[in-house]
Amino acid sequence: MNNKVRIQDDLYEAVNGEWLAQAVIPDDKPTTGGFSLLDENVEKILMQDIEDFAAGRKKSDVTGLEDAVRLYCKVLDTARRNADGIKPAMGLLAEIRSIDSAADLNEKAYDLMLKGVDLPIRLGVEADMKNATANCLFLMGPSIILPDTPYYGQPVGEKLLNAYRTMAARALSHTDLSEDEQKAYLEDTMTYDALISKQVKSQLEWADYVANYNPMSLAEVCDYVAPFDLRGLLTKLYGKDLPETVIAYDPKAIREMKEYFNEDNLALYVHWAYVKTLINKSSTLSEELAGNATLYRRTLMGVEKDPELKKQAYQRISRCYSEPIGVYYGRTYFGEEAKKDVVKMVKRIIEAYKGRMRRNGFLEEATKEKAIRKLSTIAIKMGYPDEVRDLYKDLTVREADSYYQAMENIGRQMMLDELGKLNKPVDRSEWLMPGHMVNACYDSSRNDITFPAAILQKPFYSLHQTVSENLGGIGAVISHEISHAFDNNGAHFDENGNLNNWWSEKDFEAFKALTQDMIEQWDGIEYCGGRVNGELVVSENIADNGGMAVTLEIMHDTEGADFQLYFINWAKVWCLKATDQYIQLRLQNDVHSPAKLRANIQVRNFREWYEAFDVRETDEMFIPEDKRIIIW
Ligand SMILES: [Zn+2]
Image 1 (cartoon, rainbow, N blue to C red):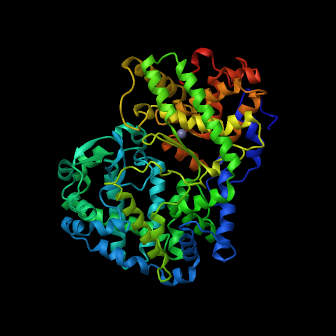
Image 2: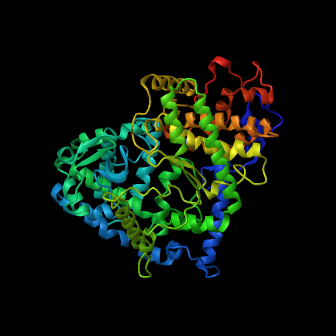
Image 3: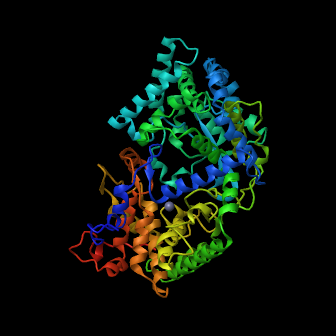
């Protein structure tokens, strides 16, 4: 605790100030504290285990783990990587370079896509919003270099593009392009990216999840995207079994694709795809190329150094082999007792939520019933899945493969796995987060909540913490995730995960008005030289608000409840020290508000906050009763 700051004036600072003052952000990371600190610990534990597997000191029978360890060793094999230099990528780069017409691209598109080259269009498969048992094919425009479209034209965007230029120029000097060609490729890349950025969605637009649902007939889309031959690409993927309808998640980019992809500017696309591929693949090439290719990301995040090689190797496999590593982590470090205890807490929270729905002041009876039904059917995924999916049986890292080749094979297999789901039913048992991830989520199409084993630790949760602390930690996170079922996006989905209006017109209007109040409560708050965009962060703020309302209600029914401990632990879980660059980035395009504001702004909506610490009108963390918002 920081004794110089009164808790009534700044809860976050009073709880975390002393720790934050002495905390040092590791030079290979943008953040420390809270979530990041747990993440660092998980990383340390797993890095040691992987090292033991690699050295043959330990064994595990988790499917896929052996393969992961083989990939780990390939990352560490710098003698081979450095001797190969850029060579492993040259075949693919030459293939991209040789594209001389749209017809030629169409011929090669399937192969290029599976090798990880960005096409003028992106494809994905996931549950259909209106029929959550079936998968659908969705389409998006390409991803741009900058983190968000509004960065174009801003000084910060210019600075980032300069970093990208420096990095790309160095990488290009390793290729067989002449100096003039290198310059032209780089300039064309910048021109093309700026052109795409005018057509694709901004992060604010992506935050409106329901707006992604734009069904179009395949025939219509094929006309929009010509001369790109989408039908040809899909035929190679699916044979004759093509979907009649596809979903344009980013409809403007699809409808206006001719603006950035046509015969006349094909060279721009080719050069852009060449440079992006070179940068993306660099991490799997020599140490020099790999080290160069992180410059842009480090500038973006304000990170000084790359992680040491062993950490890079661990981070690589923890992403590519997230399921095997998550299952291993869960089986090794997550106890049954804790699992039972937290599942019990989830059930209690769902019951309390139902009670609040029954007593809700703005919902009509019929809507209340449907909300309660939705709560009753939420599926709980706690800890880690029992088994690793079949996909990992087939990912085989062979001795003869270079690191580059191994990664290409894995990428190909994963893409085929995802796209191959199209004509299969939705697998509702799939986990969206692996067991070793310090996070949690709600999925509106499956109506389920996932709590990976790694988040079930102090300060979020411990069998040795008080119930009040656990409620202010993991309890508030659990009810936050449940609240996503009723945030401005989740509210549109029914208990089966379908986009289906279950509200009366009147109560949906009332809900929308409350949503607007939440936007206004946050909009424009100054933080670290920037401002909060209330609309961008509204879904997460509704979830925090619901999370707090329900857990505070449970506190009232808990014997020996200590409201001070509840709020102190709530502030503890949001403790975060970050680089300025990281904070600015998240402020611009993250749907979550800055951690400090999550700790400090939300509590002011609840009378328990005022009672717990005798917060008065003259205190900084006071707002009058008519400004307080409780939605659920
Ligand atoms: Zn959330």
